[in-house]
Amino acid sequence: MNYLKKFLKWTLFTIAALVLLMYIFDYGYILRGVRVVYFTGHNTAFIDDFPYFENDTIKKGDKTDVWPNHKDYNSVEATNILKRANKDWGTVAYLIIKNDSIWFESYYDGFDENSKTNSFSMAKSYVSGLLGKAIMDGHIKSLDQPISDFYPEYSYAKTTVGDLSSMASGLDWVEHYTSPFSVTARANYDDDLAETILNQNVVKTPGVEFEYLSGSTQLLGMIIEKATGKTLSNYLSESFWKPLGSSDNALWQLDDEDNKLAKAFCCIGSNAKDFARFGKLYKDHGKWNEQQILDSAFVAKSIVPRFPESPEYGYGFWLKEHLGKQFFMMQGHLGQYVIVEPNDNIIIVRLGHSKGPGDPLETYTEDIQLYIEEAYKMLNK
Image (cartoon, rainbow, N blue to C red; front, side):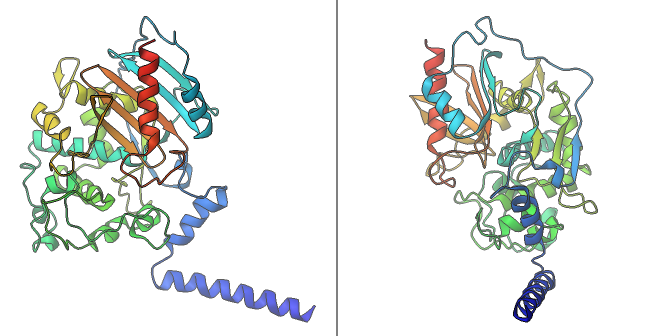
C-alpha cells in the first residue's frame, strides 16, 4: 500500500512538473490541443470542433440567393463506388451543381444541408479572394506590394502579398499535422497567433517557387486586417458572404477571446451550399447576379499556375487536370472540397471526416479523383 501511495505521489508530481515546464517554455498550447482533440474522443482535428474555440460571426445579408433545383434533381443514384467511399471515408455532404442548379445532393451521419462543418484549408481560398477585394477597394496597392509595408520587421525580405497568396513566401515554416511540437499545431491551438506568425523568418528567396505553408496565409490575413482596418470576418461578410446571398451566418475560429485574431489559414464553419458559392463566383469571373464582385483579372490569375514547374497551384486555389478537363478547387485537411470545372459548368462539393487511405499530405489524394470520376459517371447516365 505504501508503495502504491509513493507511486501515485510521484506520478502526480511528475505530471505537475511536466505541465509547469510546458507553460514555462511556452508549450501550453499542447495541453489545449490534448483537451480539444483526445479528451473528446478524436485523434486529430475534427469537422465540428467550433464549440471548443472562440469564434467570430461572418454575417449573412437580408437576402438569400436560393440555389434552384435542376430539372433532373436527384434523378440518378450515387454510383456503388461513391456510396462505398461516402460510407467508409465519413462523407457528411456530397453535391453536384450543374448549370448553377442543384443536380444531386445527399447528406450523411446526421448532418444536413444546414449543418456547419469546418472548412479547414478551404479558408485559404477565401483569404486570397479577400486580398483581391482589398486591391480592388484600394486598401492594398497590388500583388507586388511588399509585406514590409505592413510589418516593418520584414524589411530585410522581398516577400510580397502576392507571394503569400501563391505560396511562395520563403517563410521558415514546416507544414506538419501530426507532431504536437510543430508550428502548425501551435498555430491551431495557441492563444497568441500573431506572436507565432511574426516569429517566422523569411529564409528562402521569395517569389521563385511554390511551397505550401499555412503560415503564408495567416500572415496574409493579418495584413488584410491591417490594410482594411476590419476583422477578416467582417470583411468577408461585406465582400462576399452578403453579396453572394449566403443562406446562413458562418463562423470563423479565433485564437483567443482577448486577441480575437482569426485563423486565416483555416477554420470557417459553414454548410455545403454556401461554400459552393465561392466556387461559382470564380467560375463566373468574379460576377454574381451581373454585379462585378471581384476583379475578373484577379480571378483569371488565381486559377492558372503562377509557376510552370508547379502547375498544381495558382493564387489561393488548387489546379488539376483530370479526364481531359481542367479543374480548380478549394481543399481542406479532412477532405473538404469545392471542385469546379468551368467549361462544363459543374461544381462538386464534398465535406467529411476523412480523405480515406493514403498519405493525407499528398498534393492530390486518391479521393479527389474518385469524387470527380463518379460525379461524371452519374452525369453521363
